[in-house]
Image (cartoon, rainbow, N blue to C red; front, side, top):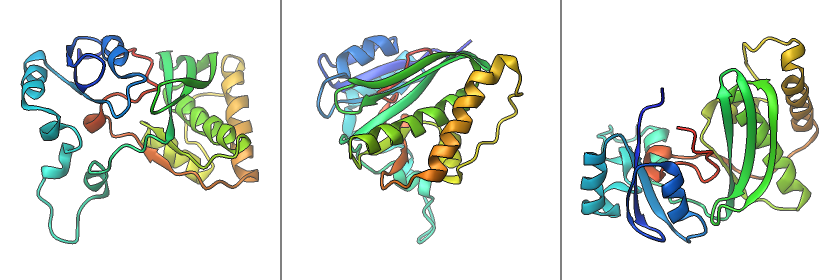
Length: 215
């Protein structure tokens, strides 16, 4: 069972603390420069809300002490602001492996730009991989060099390597997703792109805008 999360909205339609991602999403979708973040307990969320976004949003792990000249990339990246001129992709699953679907949305507005599924059987990581490649193909088709955000580091690595590493067996039940994956790999081999593919910093920024809310 997924661990309960609480969501703080500092800047949004109605700032406050919310007990579900769906409630939080209703406050931040279509709201320019929204600031929100998830916490593991209501007490922690209430405290963070009172302390304000400047202490929590955009800071994350940056307070960790690092030796000069040896700042970890993961910590440094949390200092970045969200590039709202981008799209965000995410996958929704029912079981892992299980039914898979994915979508891409405008990071600023939350508008759904494309979606696919449900796919009969697959894994979370394969779905994340397909979502990124679909996003690249979508942006190339409209002539856009927008950034793509994904919250899956594995999927980002697979896209850059143009190869996946999955233990999901190839059989009749997984034929659909493997056909899509093979097609996506072929697309990567035949196309070049200038779009940045970046890791969405969930601990700092809250859930990715394309999130299905199945926590």
